[in-house]
Image (cartoon, rainbow, N blue to C red; front, top):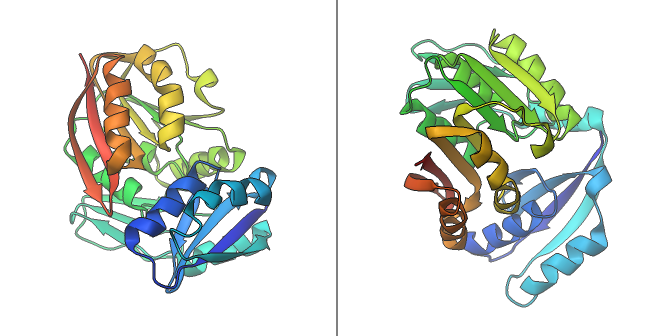
Length: 279
């Protein structure tokens, strides 16, 4: 799959202005973002790219945010090479070490996750993924049934498996993510993971103790009823992929309609990862 790179230049923008543009682009199908010295780059599958739609969506910020952008087509081979050149290992709370296959292991971490990044979202570098991993460290997973929606590289599913989950169902609509999850599960000897390609329509008729959903606000709102339908009473769901303001209150209100009660959340650069429980 080819991708388009949308390279934004923001000469004097505040962080919140950059994040406004990123939020708008995420709603249009951009699934990966990379900060640069002059702004940021957004990546979108070529099949979903429509410049007229992007221009229309961003028109609301003309005169509000000083920005310009250029578009480049990145063939799959070059995209993979770009990932490898930019991917660096990350450490989370001295407990999780995430590295690529081309990095050396590091001692002293209870959990190591090896990711062959390719072009799938979810290497742990984005704020939402790292916060989800932090929340997972304080949750009991031993012997539980877990559903990971929008699994990307499978990093959260792998973490759930390493934390002792009995079975993990990982779902993503992107065939690249589906293949990446299977490959990365094998790399990490995470035998409890099963992957499906699709969206809410492929969620198995089962009951889960924990659901992980790191996607974006609009998809979470659309799929929340499906999540609630398969979450056990007393089960926990982690939501991420949206901003603290105004998104968190919107998510809370929608969740309450399905007896999902907010308990706490983490924030980083206004991105949120939040924990809810089924009452």
